[in-house]
Image (cartoon, rainbow, N blue to C red):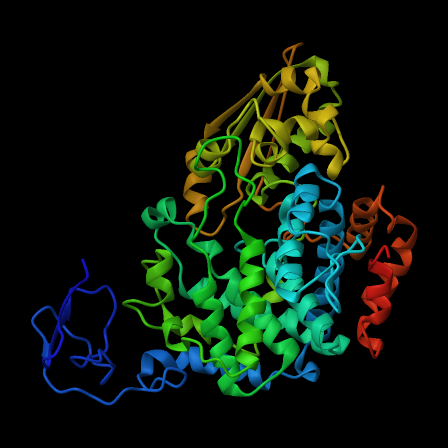
Length: 516
């Protein structure tokens, strides 16, 4: 265990038994003196001057500094063509998820919770006429984007904070479309590297939702790149965003019905916008906390495998947006390979739902333990229920808002089918979960006449190994717009978004997205 004794007013600090190489610390100030490792018996007697919070000198902070400088210096011309194209697709996909979210019962409550939305010069909520202050707009859009659990995924859901933050800041400052797209890419670059640096062991992972906490820093990086600023302001923004991060929050571990905050991406999007707004006013943020191994961001969120070198690994070479997965189904991504496996068995068997005797799902312990629920109480529970999403697949219900309509969730045929589904841990899938193949799942279908069918899926549809086409994503977008005032503008919205960098302003897209 980490232990330290601080004797304030004197010159002694004892520290040690740490998991990380620690910097020597001075007495009263507790500041870094060198990058030497210290043991339980080490004793530091000489104080050092305060380091600047934005430019800490110890080598352990250098990767975070390199990340900040990368963000400052990033130019639109630096973006590879495919990365730029993916940024447009992510924008289109997320807007569709936000608009679909406004149609859900939870989405309507979220919108109503924040008032009339008549803020002068406010920022938009796509699919509505509402205008909120930038922070509130980012929060509402972030929340709405995740309501159906239909947005992209990459160690979480980066688009749920990056796109709302970038949109709000761009609208707030009337930034150019190119600056907006640059911010989208930057959010992924910064956020996912922070995820890499703050991984957790299996033991810590079961207790802390550490892989959600980085989303606020992703939002802060996106908003700051959209706005532009000095290196000092960028460092402050990253520090503010880290400090604004809410506690790592599980969304299915506190009882049912599932709580409406889910992973709290709305609040993290708000924190990211606030980080940039404060930094632009030269309000100093705690940049040093990003890489302080003892009391910094990683320790706060429960990470026990902090590796600060990951913050700057392969910057400008490995573009993290390339690794995002687009979702084909409105459900937790951990269940998508199950949905694919079930779809495959049903298609290959050619049987009707009423002919099914039993469906066996074999998966990792996380999925079996956390997501086995044969009677989901509400729509959010359905998004995390193996049995419910399996039933949707067997019944061939079109993925989207239709999955969680009250008429669907209360259908007796759905309830009866869920009772036929057995979920169990597959040792092979469990091993794969911790060794780079986290989605491995098998579905077996037993027919009443004795026939059986089985399929194993390693990578879900939409993963970079099994990507959705542009046409697939356009169809998903149009489906998400059904029943809204934006449905008639669907084709124009696709055209405007996919050619956004050819425009001089975001006003055209903004007008199309507003119902006013």
